[in-house]
Length: 319
Image (cartoon, rainbow, N blue to C red):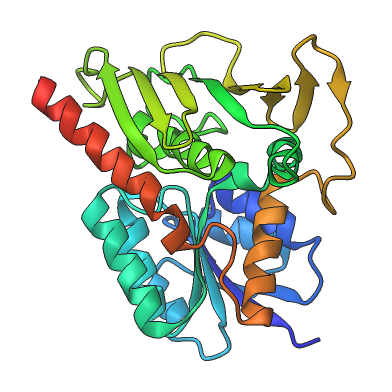
């Protein structure tokens, strides 16, 4: 098996998660690590045995022995860097979100179609075993979603990342965290979003973003979704999904799944791993080897960003 060589950009919390996942995948080697601070990036590279370290993505893209790139960089850089990777002839996986505007997301999709390269976005919920379990039942015709009730709650009143470290950029409830659920709702129902509404709370005086948001969606299948998001919630933290179906209710808490009566459901055999990031990366590399479109390709997730744009314009009009 020919080794796929990878440059990974972003040595923060999610970059490390990808490095950990890739260690478990045969035939893949990370040969270059890109980070904002050279010293910290070098420390991470040494931990994972990555030979090349740089603070300039262009340097990695110029390396002929790099086949693919995974971008775990700040949201605001995703689209431009994704375009740069495709222009350099590299397959690319962009961590969620693909972009922070519809126009930028469309540009990445157009570039992928022009190059024919594999371009994928890290919509991890498609790969988490708990959500895969539900998806397989839907695909088998065993159930139909009537409603999804989702809570995405964090306590981030300062600009910190998942490791409690200061961020160099600002996170966003709509363009990042809502993207997970909007795409998952599309994916699980198999329909198109025909109605979308949003309201948001006060804008943070320093961060310049809304800290609380509520979103309602309706699919062409008739299913509805209610999504509550907050950076103000002081525990429990995380995202919790309730699937209310015609035959059964399921509650997913990351990789744990229970039924409506809180009876645990074993999802350990749904896929080859319980690690959603690893499974996401496995799909990326498999698509490269097989010359096919991956699950969560940039084209497949574009409807999510069309909905986010619709919601953003609605919020801006509301003032």
